[in-house]
Length: 201
Image 1 (tube, rainbow, N blue to C red):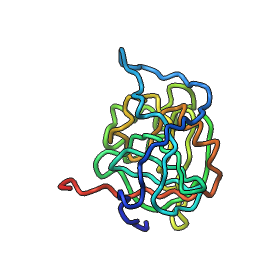
Image 2: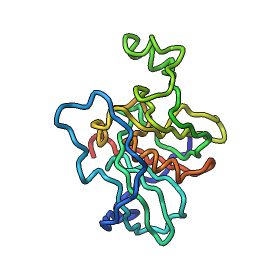
Image 3: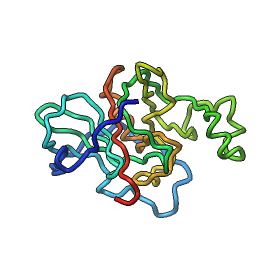
Image 4: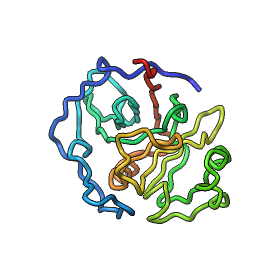
């Protein structure tokens, strides 16, 4: 995979323009911790970019748990996300090769090997629905060389994990937010996942 330069403050000016993003209807979360509410700063906002990115691209900044959908006029919609833990996060340049509503989910062999008690029972797949880990929508990341990379941008039934590195490598959004993103992203959309900063940094 082609590694890309680190996304820095020179590339994005996170000047939130208090412009709300209209979202699709709510999708119910399951097992929500008592008293949990999505922090207001995690709501999607339109921000100004200091670089001239092409519109209609996805850029994921793991250091700030943010996904940007670029717009015309040096603007973008910023969504807060969860990312892969440790070395399960993979930076690179991809494109959206498939999209699915309420997708089914099958853990990879590597996931089953890491945590058989949790994943082995789903080795033949889990149907889509409100309890599915991929949530309401999924966008599948491909490369020309590999095809499907098994990395996804998807919803989650655990929205309280947004803003943390806990996933098995995928980028996750609140279900309402991923529905909004999904509706704006066609097949073939370029998606850049910038590398994580070294732990020492």
